[in-house]
Image (cartoon, rainbow, N blue to C red; front, side, top):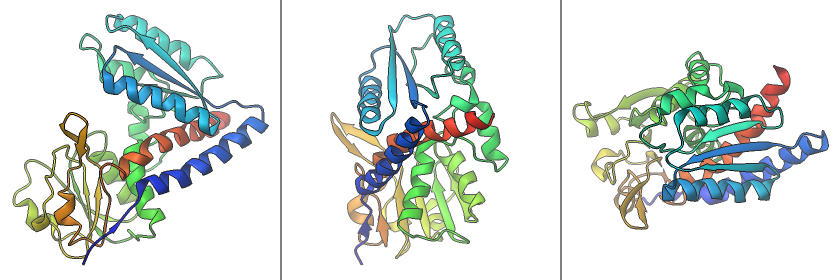
Length: 284
């Protein structure tokens, strides 16, 4: 058996067309969708991701304002920028690129974003909604995992799903989102005993641990669906996921590559969150 390789770029293109159509409908109502991206410092990866959002927004009808500040910007000034964006009715989404300089408290900054403009779903309010089962704005990477399963017509109702990784960004929110969709969840982590024996019981394995090639062929049962939400730079410019792709693809039924899988969809889904935010703001 050789797995069907899931083309995240093709799925992202589908979603991009849908987002573009929704953005156009808002523009016809006189609403110009706008995202503000706050970038503090000059971390190369952050600069790249921030500017890629500007480019993507231009192609799908969402205005993206990039607010760049030097790395020595005081925390109070960053909080003031966010407060101004919170109060600006023409800004519908706010995101802060990470990492922030060490003198800035990340949690304090993220908590300052209004929850209805929190397109990265990092505020305590949105995490609370997610935990209660009411999904307002949800993180893009877990949402990408859900969308892949949905768009590949992989049923998750009642399925045994093993999530490897319990992080705040992917593992925890993804577990809650899958429970809401009636999957049966096991969350594994560094303290899990005999990880292969646990993961081999799953029908769907989602890797989100942030460790290159952690998931090996002996951890996967034949026919398992494998979603790789990890990305690790193993040498300058070369990235791999958390799954040993070449070995596991010979056992799995479906598998996502890295790059070209989950990551291909995250920015597009975050842009869709801007439009979701507009809908919630209209109701509030």
